Image 1 (cartoon, rainbow, N blue to C red):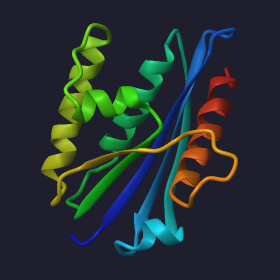
Image 2 (cartoon, one colour; image 1 turned 120 degrees about the horizontal axis):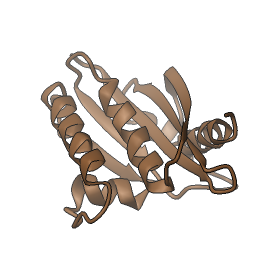
Image 3 (spheres, rainbow, N blue to C red; image 1 turned 120 degrees about the vertical axis):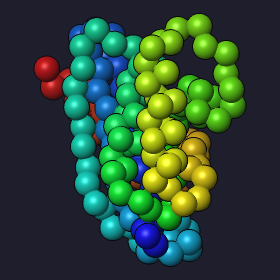
Image 4 (cartoon, rainbow, N blue to C red; image 1 turned 90 degrees about the horizontal axis):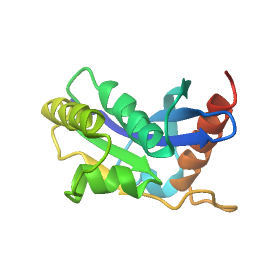
Length: 154
């Protein structure tokens, strides 16, 4: 159970097309210093299109897909996102006024993934859309492209 993962997520929404998309990249950390050295092994990359959504629902959906990918016990999990909506709902106890059912499912997926994760799941914010991203933020750049491509694909 010494597997350590980082899953970068991003959501996109195209209002002119009334459709969105998500991007998710699952990477394995070889050791704790990997975050600084960009030595990631990509396990998988995914993107999916959706219709009749919002940017917020796409950000949460991407994080939910990331969490649901944990099927076996692991040592650690970091969810990397440029969405304060995800961070706020996952870790900051934000008061919920919209997307109540979706966020309830999000909470259950956090609990389920946490039960399979030795250490506390970390939700880490990164600045999105950077011209010269750090090695860690470059995962978000990949997810951003996947999400935007998906939002244009239907």
